[in-house]
Image 1 (cartoon, helix red, strand yellow):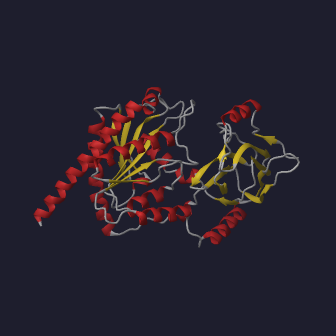
Image 2 (cartoon, helix red, strand yellow; image 1 turned 90 degrees about the horizontal axis):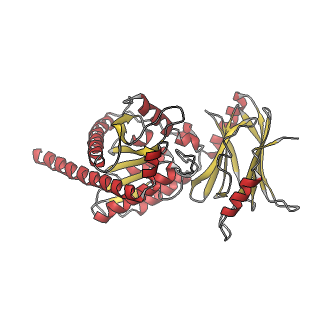
Image 3 (cartoon, helix red, strand yellow; image 1 turned 180 degrees about the horizontal axis):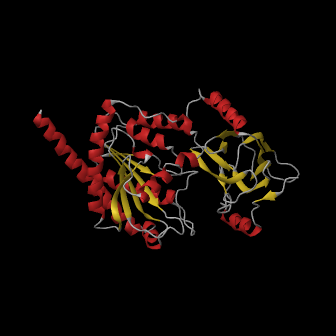
Length: 412
């Protein structure tokens, strides 16, 4: 008999019960989870209020098991997936696209899916989603991954279809410059989190929405959001959104964090793209941010390689110039209203900034791991002031770019 682990403590379960909405959720609800097993076999069990469909598959590098389900409301304790049990090192869950949720299990070693199913309610017991795993060798694991890839290769990506629909519905007659605002993380990817319950994905979404409202109020620019709800968007898809809308500026919003024992840092930082990081901290942050797809269970082997082309290289050079210009302007405007990092201008290899023809900047609003920064990040007055400074930097950027374009026309 497999031993149970990660049972939801009764006190925590009652605590969650009190938080449940008074009306029935329109989506299936998960109320309990546990993992059982050892180094050879494991069983993942998720308690639900109704039966649902599922699709389970494995991913490599690192070893992961992914379970795709319809959109689920997860009423589970904080940190429930952090503990290790047998084959399962940790697991996470959340929204991965409108109408769809995902569970991702990190494995200690290769394992195959023996069974993945949902038990119907019976004898007073609620339905349960169950995934049974058994240890295997790498060769067998990779064969399974390859077979799954062949099976799904012809299927269109839901996120790509969604983005294409959004782009197609854009007002073709609107000639205003497009500003794409990219709230980092979302859905299954929470980003940086605090012990007091705040998380990066919510903080940056609130800021992005306020910035959209401020920019749109001026009427000069059209604003497109990569996400405006708690949805996960793959990194490559964020870049595609900017390119499909022929964005004149791409601004990715984040909030940094330092792990315990790595000191304390504070203030906002503005990053541009560079193959060589400006310092070790920038390199580490880029590595962390570039793991978003991995966290959400994306098959990284499907990502297209960069196209080596002299025209693209030339476009990148011009784009880099405009990106650096906007970054400097952004720092200048923000320093009058917000607290900045001691080195506010940095660069690193952020995947989300790699559109060759779109000036792109990543703004870290502050450190959620710093008490004073966190107080500012959740403050309405700080947000309003900082949004105003960012909007002003956008205004100055387009003013200077228009002057540069007109000057080039005069030369010709």
